[in-house]
Each structure stands twice: as C-alpha cells, then as structure tokens.
Length: 412
Image (cartoon, rainbow, N blue to C red; front, top):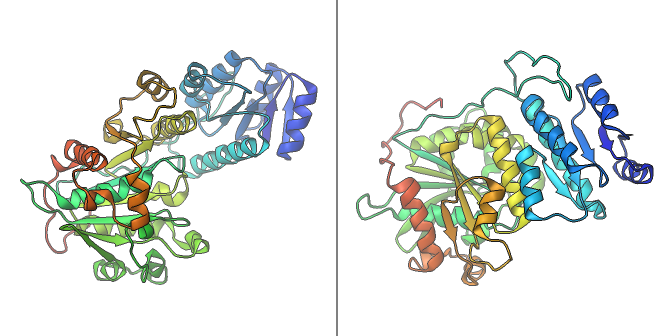
C-alpha cells in the first residue's frame, strides 16, 4: 500500500482517491511510525505541501537503509537545482500533482522497481532499527561478468523513451562491424530486446522472418547452431551485422524468459567480437538479465529535465545493483539542442561526466525512414563521426578479435 505524506487534509483525500490503495499520514512522526511498523511498504508519496528538506532527508535514509522503499515527490514547479538535490537524495520521481496520469505512471514505475529489488536474493543481515526509517541492508551485488579479451557485451539503455536509444544501438553496431584500419572488420551481433516495441527491424529495413520468439519452444536446448538460424544478416557499405530481432507481436514479449535471454547472450558472446543489445526503457526481469550479462553500459539521455531525471534514477539503480562505475558510459544525444539547459547544469543533475556527444540532425529520422543507419550510408556525417569517436574511445581500442569456433562458455 502506498503511504501519502501530506499536511493538508483536502489534498491528502484527493491523492488517496486517485491512487486507490493508499493511506494518508499528516505528520512526519506518523510517517516514521507507519514505515517502521510495516516492512512490506514500498512507496512513500510526499505531497505538495510537505517541506523539501523532510523529503530529501527521508529519501536519503531510504537510499542507504531501505532501497526497496521508493520516494516520489509532488511539486507544481521545479527548477534544475531542486531536481538535482532531489535526485541526489534518492527521490525516484518528481511529478506535477495536477497531472494525474503522470502521478499514476510515476507511482507505478516506482512500485515496479521496488518489486524488482525485492525479488533479487539477499545474503546480508538486516540493518539494526533506526529512525527514520529502519530496514534491511541493500541487496548484494548482481552478478557482473569479468572483462573478456574474446568478446564484449555492450548494452544501450535509456530509462525514458524518445532519447534515440535504438539509433545509438544500430549505428554503434554498424560502426563496430566496420572496425578500424588496424583491426579490420569485426564480427558483431545486434540483439533487439525491446521485446514489445522493438524498432531495429524497421530502422535497418529487415524482414522479421525469424525473431527471438522462435527460440521460446527450444529455450531449454538452444545452442550455437540454433541461434544462428534465428539471426538476420544486415549488409550495407561493407559492414555486416547479424541481428536477432524482437517479436512481431507485443503479446509474446512476456514469454521470453530471463533464463532464455541469459543463454542467448552467453552463446552470442562466444560467437562474436561484440554483442550490442538494444533494450526497453524499463527495469524488467528481462532487462535485468541483459544488464547482468553486460560488460559495458551505454546510457543515453537528451538535454531535457525528464530525460536527465530518469538517467539519474538509472545511475542510482545501478549503484543498488552494484554495476561497475567504470563500465558506464553516458551519451548525450541531440547534445547541441537549444533547450535552455547548460552542460554544467546537465552534469550537476547526473553527477557523472559525459563521454559521448551526438549532435542533432534531421538526417537521423530520414535515415530511420529509409531503413539505412547513417553509420552505413554516410560514415562522414557528424552523427556517424560522433558515434565512431565513442566506439574507438571505449571499445575498438581495447578489444581483441574473438576466437573462432566453439569454446567453453563463460560463466561471467
């Protein structure tokens, strides 16, 4: 049940009616008592009249002592400085209370994230009770594969849709396949794990005759030969990429299990120099399976407050899951957009340096409509050059070619 902390009785009633299963508390003392008496609570909603200092202090303690308890803050207006302080404290979402759809979406996302955290096994003793609030320690580190000289798994992720995640993934895969003069072409597999609404097939003009859905009936016995039959070859401008496409029907997405995804990634990284994964904008069990098997995380955002806020939440989630900081690469797409936010303000919000800057260009949607990514059609285009700079800086300069043929599957 959601806890609503709001001083004004009328506002508390409105929020209770909006959320349904919720209980309102009027004071900080009531909030602490409620949280400490029920460890099953997963969300606290700070109403518009509650002091920011109380919300930040509460979220900061939850982040350290009880990470599965989410905090959502309601504010009618918000500037960059306040948003930065909120995200630094561990507030998951900051939402306009007048936008009821946004409030419902934010609470749903927070509850889903809490469920994901609670579902991960814990191996630590609980933290002794302290107020406010007392809780078990954070979950243990997720299994993260060690760096491999044979292959690299690169997952492109954005917690908000519309950031250009699939554009980065497809162009990065092609760029890696092109290789460098020193290395020559590289063997690359691109996997579309946006299982419900994948765009890779459209962006690369591929016919989805076989998709990851075809692996579902043989999930318990898929091998390298079986995986190869599911791949679709993309060829253009000298670059070749093998692509595992997302299902055509969104309803099938739920049938693709975490174990199947893990097995496919293990097989692919034994077959290719690079495995590039395009993902959905959510921390589902399927996405966590991909993230757990990843060597490098390419996190995409645009210079807009909602996108930067979601990036900050993603980075906080990565801290909870203990994904290595040195394996994270932040890429700012449409970096030259004039939207009233300076680079200094961007870095203040995300608290992490930006590695890649991709410029805006009307050629990007045009290339998507044609089904030919810019990296293949126009290697000298400013967008292509930016992605190549990223690829050389982070990946092509460090990876060795993968071994040919089958060999012992890496366990991570």
